[in-house]
Image 1 (cartoon, rainbow, N blue to C red):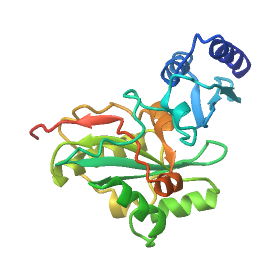
Image 2 (cartoon, rainbow, N blue to C red; image 1 turned 90 degrees about the vertical axis):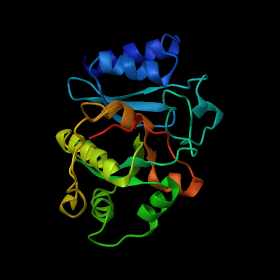
Image 3 (spheres, rainbow, N blue to C red; image 1 turned 45 degrees about the vertical axis):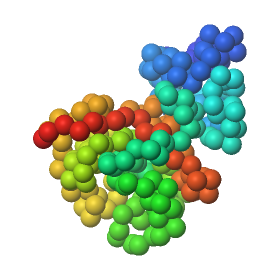
Image 4 (cartoon, helix red, strand yellow; image 1 turned 30 degrees about the vertical axis):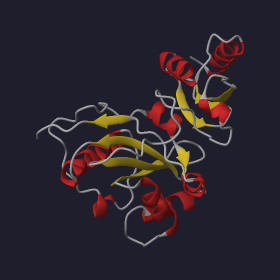
Length: 235
């Protein structure tokens, strides 16, 4: 669908309450085969099939982001704003991502942790050249864009098991066209024999909608809800 037609159709559906939630909007975007380019506090940036960009604006009154207007990302399917800190005995797999202002280039870092808040602080404040996400931070600085964070999945298992899912998500990111700066230092990981509970490809719309700017996560002590869960299974 071309940009002008798509914008008119989507905005009319939002204004008439035919689309009344972020989930409905993303479902419609997927059905119309549009590309999500940016997630704003009260708008969604999109690209039509003709390559032209446009925005649709909304104020979904039934979503938790309305109750907490400072949060720039919509709620996930469970309508929760932060991770369930009661999870124990496993690891979170997360992504740090950055996209060029024209949307043509994108880069990522995939990691795992048992403490999201602490790990996000380390990524923001402790940069050691050649280690962890420092190359992504440098990439984003060159492009003059922000780094955003998404919690991809919760892995019910030990670190060795979690590392396989970390490798799996890196594989999905690379297949989706993401550069992985310095991955030769951190990305040599095995893959799970059965990627239980995980998508078969990088879920672009869900990740763009759920991601939050890394500085905001750290400054406000926020942690997004994970998108997927990998229950313990034998290799």
